[in-house]
Image (cartoon, rainbow, N blue to C red; front, side, top):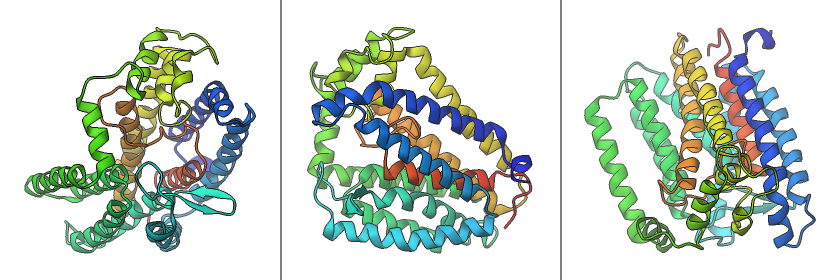
Length: 353
């Protein structure tokens, strides 16, 4: 029953992206591992283990009915919400923020698991009544999460969750007046983050300033232009050896140097197919909760990919946000498996709460 009701285009696109991501980690991670004093295959083995667990979680979650997904979201929200609050007190400072907890010998970023749960629970709160009468409880939920994120601070994740929620509100029937108010509040919030957090200010100033040849963005721009249409070949990149995050945050320009611009366009195309096909499938659903939740999860995938690519192309300040399924990841990859499993569950034919 699962095979005949699941969206094969979305599932196939996810598998293609996972295969592409494995190629990228194989090609880009050995130089990074050598710099850190690890064996060359260190990140490759860790990525394959995380990817295997992620695909297993994706399959198990996609078997669930929408009500089961909602229950899972509530449980995960309670667990990882508490862990996110714990980061304010227990997490060490890394790059100006407190996001990571050390648990069971691994570093875990709880907000990655929290993100799809907020999307699903927010959709349920909005769907309980017609129009936007569920606006107040849903806003309190999202506002509380965003408030904790800004205390870490993790401005990029806070902005992403806010954008997803605003998109859900628009689909739920929010008027253009409220959209304008939400955009205004968002702009004021971003200015506040710039004024209050030095590391955010530094990233924005670097973005609007001249590109230095040997900083991250300068190296990324040279890597982007040096690959040509077909790239230098797997493992043959030169410029990206200088990037400390070549296998994670800047994997898109690593793909450009080693596999070429055409490969990057293929990545964009597959992401577009997955997101648009998921949106098209859920558009036909008569269940308001399923429609809002699936829309939010598809928007989450598309927006995160878009933000990462924009950062790699120097169209946005650096965010520390990975390219889903393509970049190396541990806990973020497992959280992505849960989120994509939820998307597959909601986009199954005949899915209803």
